[in-house]
Length: 334
Image (cartoon, rainbow, N blue to C red; front, top):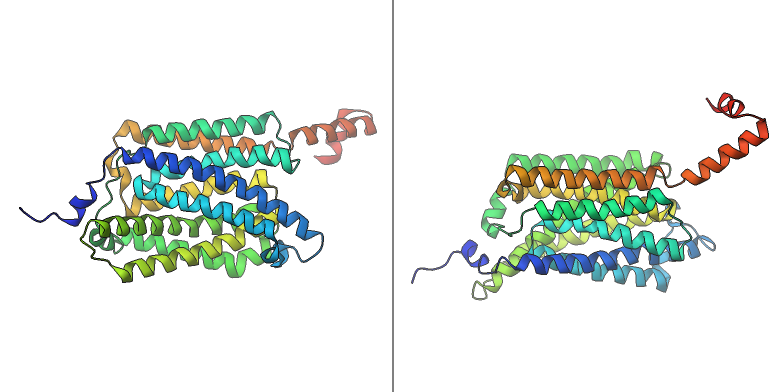
């Protein structure tokens, strides 16, 4: 009987394992969405008696509620890690939209961050857009062996991606972040999302390595496990630090959805370059996945741009009364 190659051994896992990945991804979104709210509550409490995280403070490290939020995120990330081991990244990642819905509902209840009709519509469209994307994304996890994966990391496309992300991260860390990070929500979230794409790729590769070793008669690539673990740890530390700053400086209902859009975009790009998941899709599925993602982006736009529309309208009405006519209002601000 001929020896089975490592790539063939990986395919021993049934195609139905993608459904296991979906269930794990959904549970991950619930835990991660809850963690945003728990950590935000902790940061609000600490801001009243110490240096805020947005100003460089680390008082949250001694607060039990912040650690509860971190534990919730840790459970969610572990479930997410397991999901990547069973399903393609382009199938698992879009389900992060559910964390937007979870955090929005919990923020409305515990943080008094009320959502108007546009925000609620945005949350609904997040779910619908992600559902369409999931339906049209690749269903079978056809990740190559670790040997082939290492060869793919030497492709110029992936090397260029690594260089671009490194330039983005260094620019934000040393130049853009200190100047504009406290004024624009996208700055720190761009850093978290770009670095986070490496976290996903490393988790996917680590899951592949563990699966491959489990069917290779005890042969273990300890050096690869060690390197991947270091990459994951390093990237998570950067994400945790700058995501905390964003949560402290800006509203949760803004941070969560924008982070989802950026993070999903970078993960889809990285997975298409490294794992070539999209090569196994036909034109209809590619178009459907693109439409689903565009619907999600529109949903995020509704949630972000119109989140204070009722407040703006109230200010306009007040100004109209104060200056007598609506024309006086416009002549003052235009």
